[in-house]
Image (cartoon, rainbow, N blue to C red; front, side):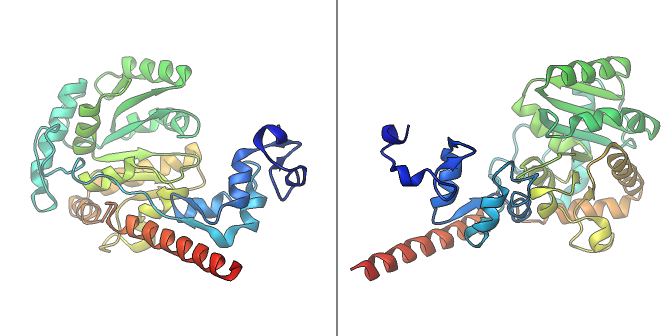
Length: 314
């Protein structure tokens, strides 16, 4: 394969393209790139470890000086509760009372009990081990015992799909599950759910929680990757802080997720504190504005370094 790719025999070393006796293009790219980027600062640290690095942690530790984590953003013209044509009622941070109509519309759409005082958990996700949706499934008793509701939209692992559909059938007024993807319903869940739950075991960045912040759905997330970087927990900044935007839990276990759900339920019934969380989230900049400028700076640095190298070679 070396001859096929036009590579020298000398390139087949641990410092070249060799990877456990084979050729790895990903390893080669990480080895020889001028810069390496990933989509959040915390994930950039996690992938340097043996578990998060998936066999490439050692190489990424060696190349840590050229590794950057730059958060993703979302298209705030598409995800905008003030102009969104897919939701039942448009609203803003200054008109949060209008948001309630979306919760009612979501409950009606999914056949949930029309309970404005029940904490409505929203999930928009692939159903997979990585996304931690098995942990949420194990928390169905907690959700029911605490008087909460769940609206889930997603698809993935057939076993998880079947099990979620079974619990939805058993408690139709409290649990609603739609297998598949529906863009309009995704927008309505963001606008109508009280929280968006993202219990991922690992998450490079995540976009769902960014949309949630934009729509006043308080995120409940695991303290990993970009989730840790984009959500500020009540216990980190204090309930009264203007920085607080959601709830985080760690390590990623059934019990810790249950604790996060219960904390959210308590906060939800403190209307003033909950409104403050919503307002803080909606005031957070989740656009590409500042993130894109960081990429621009990085690209200019690479170009300048290349020009300097060319100059010295001359």
